[in-house]
Image (tube, rainbow, N blue to C red; front, top):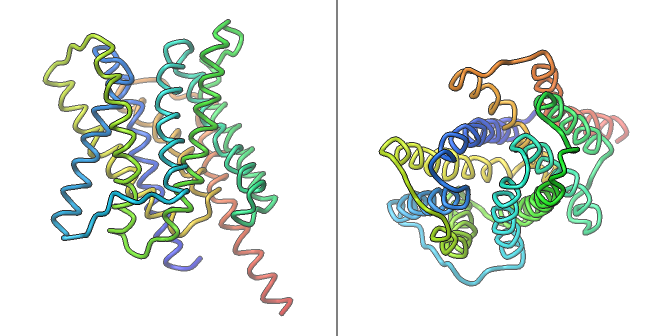
Length: 299
């Protein structure tokens, strides 16, 4: 594995760690705040952090124009936040996690349909392994037969829209040259989403404590600003399918964080699921190395 690719994967794993903390933060905050209120605050905190970093580095920031891939990412991201959080009111958090993590399947379908990237059979196998791994980690609470069809359908919409965000982001990021360019693209995508979602903040009663504010800041700075930044850094090098699998990897860190922070029980199913997800992330890289070796031998 080439050094630059290993570095990109390392960024992806860091992103997965920070995104994995997201669920723990949000679970804590939902006792006082609505999901959409949390989404709005975390987005504005993340945008503020990214903007200040770009200004400190003296990077020229042009919020306009937007290319079609950035528009696709903005549409997917905004729709994802709306469908995910509204769906979460109508179904369980476990169902939401499993269904939204079908996103890699839709990423694969979009890539094949649009012909944006080469897709191998090993990518499909890795996605199946990852989805089964996610299911195993939460099987004890997963139940589609709850009568909450509307919520489950909204979460499926969250999976499709998340896939649109991934495909649009990957195409936009691969056009960039430097880390500051990628940071600027991230701001261009997050800022319109924050603006569109801000009115929803007023729809629900608000009651926060000093601890809530601290957790919100941590969610915005670490899980959102830094999490997405590291993910975009990985996305500039790895395939779009791999980028989607790195997000699924965050599920592993979610239940680890829940174990250490919230004291939740870890079962054999969870460990097996985690192993499958990790194997799914490793498989495409191993396949690429084997295919490259075979191609060199044929030459």
